[in-house]
Image 1 (cartoon, one colour):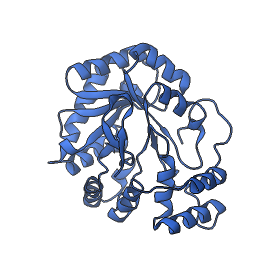
Image 2 (cartoon, one colour):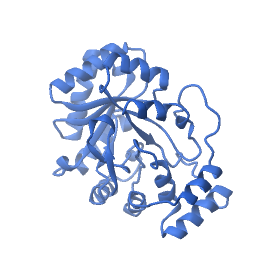
Image 3 (tube, helix red, strand yellow):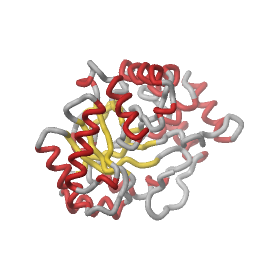
Length: 281
């Protein structure tokens, strides 16, 4: 599994990790097996959130990483409604209990909210000082929001921006990804398969993915993931609740696409026009 520095933190993190949104809908034992299979394949970045299944998914992750905590780059997220200073501290403690650990590697504000960002980031700083989290960041922030967060936290304060990013939604490449790269902030793309909108096998894009996959002895989804992490500073966190899907995802971490592959994919799945804000769905 290919690793790269997680922005300015310098921590080596696998380019393909494991997302966990909606995993509470699957059979619990199978989910735990799948997450552990991902760890076995080097997908040691596991991302979750207090929102997912109202805490149930954090409990699943806690079960999956039991006895293997030191292998994992563990991330969770606090809801904007819990983003006041005191509620951030309480929310983090609750997440730690559900995850059966004493610290997070990364703690994110799930999306911009109404609580003053200064107080949210002050709480994150307190958690860093107390050893509850190593790094903090944000999710679903556009460039203007990122600039404001950086003005509050200072350079090398914000470690990550987690955003929607898949073949048919590449708008972050216009500004967000570039701005983050300039400030050595990692960009983690969620829902890399488009949450059910992955190119159909019979579509032009689907046929191209299949052709490239055949040439590399891979799957179309592995090709898509490899394309999404082609740029320095980019990471992706696909979800998989079955071990065979985990293996497909993990294969992307060693897949080397050719320059021709890249050009063909760029053409088939264009960035489109710049848009205001960042999409969340």
